[in-house]
Image (cartoon, each protein chain N blue to C red):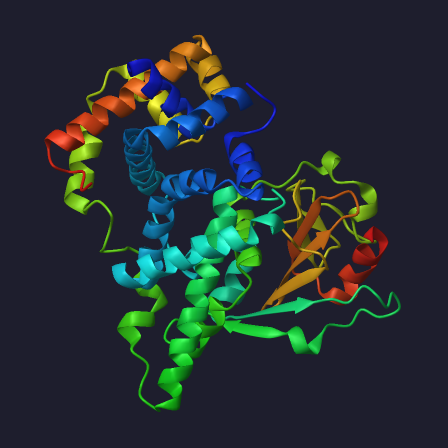
Length: 189
Length: 227
């Protein structure tokens, strides 16, 4: 492994003007950001628009990213700040009109559990049930990575196996889950 | 082919050398299928993230936490129908003063029915809210030995009953030290009724969080001595 993390390498490339690296970053973080913004705005359309604005802002401001926080945390903050600004401007407009504020759109408590998801609740349950049936080694490696955010090195120590085996197990788990999602029509694109 | 996708999986996780990173980028350019797979990995990660972190309103977390995890904070929070949290930024420029920046004061009320409170909360500093919740949720006080003596306000000592709590007989104080300053450049403190949370960026790059029912008049010596 090199000294730099994957995200650090990605950021360096983007700072150097590599559009492909930027595209890779969008592919990697767009679902996570979109999901957060849907939860925040309760509107898929608004969230998509904010998502686009966020990545444009990321491209413009990448030079100011110093790595004090994780890359996604930084992206997320930009997205949420843009959402707040959106909210503030719509609130100001609604006040000007002296109309009552549309509580259903802006109520914080309504952000607690998003109803609109990239993958529906029912599908989510089916996928999680399927993951439970995976071979124990594949499931353990995959969950340590995806749920706990452990590095391959840490997983190798926990599972007492070589890093190459961890890499292979995580890959195979992903492949099996994605094949299942495709077969069951749970993957939209 | 399988080996290539396995490499892509490791690339997605950032578990690669600089050379493999560069090759992965080239592969993305030449192979549209790689982009599709990368996107599917990202969707899967997002799905798993939902399982790991159920989304809960930060305000709800804070409100729910305080009475449960900090029993000595309970009375103040439950007695008041409306809880006021005041965020103040303290000037450090004038060391003779321990004043607060009036212009930056912002009162947040947790009365959930108040639309104004929600608006203010939305515009509150995300970093601070995140940190507050982190501190409250972690509830892991440092052992007394890990808190340097100079950080303890004069007259305070570890409680006989609970060594992670410092007391002067009347007031109580807990400490946390974080390795990151989370963008906090000036001393900030929160007031929640009679309780206070101080966020003190230290010169060594760490962040000291002290919380308890210690008012600024008492905490000021500690804060001045640290910066």
